[in-house]
Image (tube, rainbow, N blue to C red; front, side, top):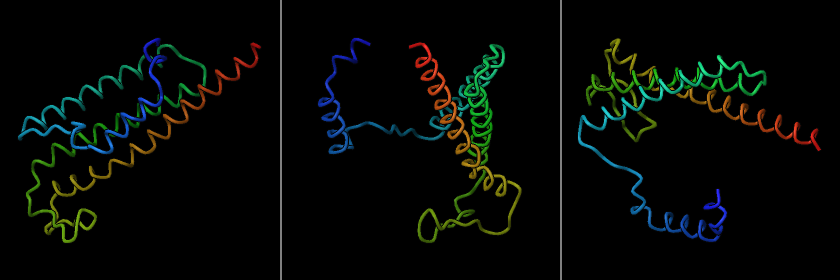
Length: 159
């Protein structure tokens, strides 16, 4: 904590400005040739699933009474579902041929070609992963808000 107190805000703003001015030097992306990038990405989903399962189990085991902890459990469930859908989507994506999806004028105008197969339909539905990720982020926000307000309230009562 002492290290962070010594950093001046103007240096943080300077570093942020450098990243905006020279984005190529941020090294934000690391491209890999196929298939090693996909393997690492899929392993990350598996480890994230394991971490979410452990967090959910630990919260249940500890039986915290506050409402914020229930929101954190919901976050774990939604993110677990998101990970399963994303993992499946990446896996099914290997079976989709380049001609199966036509992009006439960009990404937002993509459509699938006929005939619709079970693989194509599964790929389509796994691209709807925001159905799980958006509620997960909302639950995380509600969790943090609830825990913060609870801590603030107990601090005020202690004064």
